[in-house]
Image 1 (cartoon, rainbow, N blue to C red):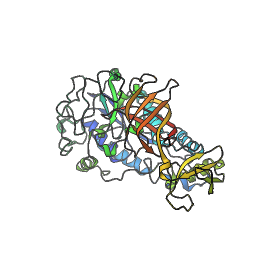
Image 2 (image 1 turned 90 degrees about the horizontal axis):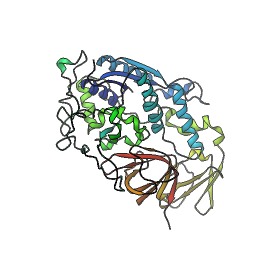
Image 3 (image 1 turned 180 degrees about the vertical axis):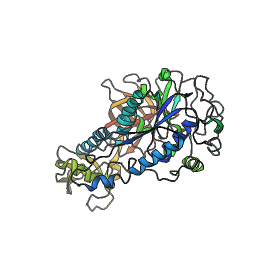
Image 4 (image 1 turned 30 degrees about the vertical axis):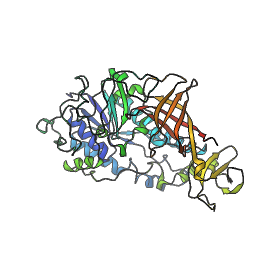
Length: 452
């Protein structure tokens, strides 16, 4: 009988999800490994023929090798292993991906995969098998706050429970008994699974007492005090791509490796217990894009987007031609086919008149943005009140200080303290407090130009 409940662990076959499963087993959860199979001939073939799927499945996070690795790790840990066929759900993500490019927007399929599949379909599967939680290998945290957001400033944490620091959950971060982590399972009573020596494996700067080493144990009935926050490993933080999780589901999410400040510690821990994936490279490509060539996928799925048009400067002067607006993104510099006396970048895409506008780097600066389809992960802020936050506008962007306003029409307005480069429609704008708690986020609809 599990002490902490039953958890579905999304097993990708990589080191992060594998170590997450190890940590959860050590902490006394009843773990069930699930591999999400998104392959199949209809996945991405388009016009590329039968070889496309084979090429696609050699990389990414859903190849036959990944499935074999995930199965082997679950067997090693004494975990049941399920394979879910999610091709139809993934086709929806691929359609979203190519449709965004067709509409001159730059998509973020990872956010949609997390929102629709990992914390949508997978939570539904958890309900079917009687599991309270879903865990993944994402670098993020679920933290507790007991209090309210107020004072006209959502950028300040006002809960009575301090947030964990970047260095760990040390003195000053103790939790009450209702939210303390259970003691770590000792190897002598590891219920038949492989002993997991993580007490010695967290490395210098990561050691914690037994009560605070594991991810926060979150009770679903306390969801009002549960928040998404940045990982202790800021270089690997993935909270940006998790902003779409529904607020009421945060209490059911576990991110074990988000509590570890150094990826090397994760790999060393996996190696120490003999997991063969300890040195497996991180996935760097979009798993459904063959050869990492998104343009070919768009051409195959949406051939009508390949209409030649004009490339213009900001004054409307024609500088050249292009083969389709869908083949460009804001901030792009390479592949423009235009000789100029200075570096030029794509600054605007217009699908209506089929034009690409280019200009110097200064033309990429924006003072703010407007976003729609907003998802709040705190109590929704007051309407038409400006509040401070740090705003992240793409995955590799450092959150920039500024302020935001929840509009009466439900949209999100953002103003940056300092103009930001390449604010791109289709990407997500995610809001953070000074402590790294995710306030919410939305999808960028338009950039606000810097006033002359």
